[in-house]
Image (cartoon, rainbow, N blue to C red; front, side, top):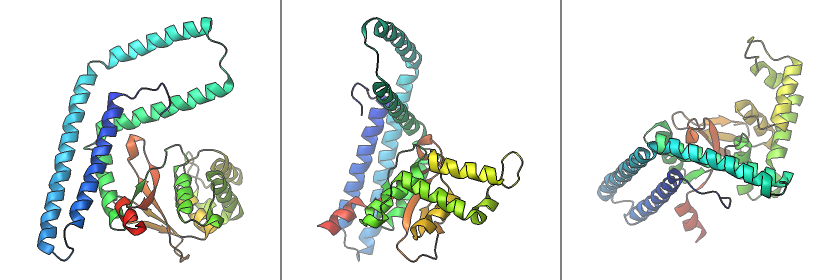
Length: 299
């Protein structure tokens, strides 16, 4: 976290909850390791014990969040007013005492403020959605991934999440010839779509008229893929399978995995598609081996 940016109580509590969840998972893994796989009776008891541990922790977190929300609701307006007053006073003092802020410093300050805002939104979503759809989605995804000895690897939600997730997946393969940056992935995707317009143009329509994109609209779309933080979806994933000559599978909580590029027989790139990530909307994450599983294989 940037120096001088103070964590809110919501952020601190969310951090504490994440640690407690991680500690519980470590305890659960230890419990599983202690029970022989062929002891079906003990395995069934273990499943019930684990479910109770998870339910108890979830109930504890919910109660702590309710208490924090109750405390904070009476103070929010005072805090906001106080912050605004401080900003005004600080602004007046800066004009009198501080030297001119450089453009580089302004960029750093803006980036820090954006990151602070993002963390606050995540913390707020933790408070609001522990029992909601995001929490349930996370549990379902964790269960699906665990069956493949995988877990979610978080990717920043900056509009480039799909490309960053693929960048991470390629980096995990330890094959330099496959490594690509987000910028290169976007550029290669756009170039492929331009050179195979007939494969993509029929699936793009003007939202106002319902008509298929014109050539000019399609070029604008490809330019945004290449040069902006435009969100990527299934069309871009299809293009990327053909650029990389690799299949891509997308794991979802409530639907079967979507498999794209099945004509390629290599190990697939695996992404996680979340509809309710942190309350920020649709989002892609990468995956990695389960920590305990990774440690066991490396030892």
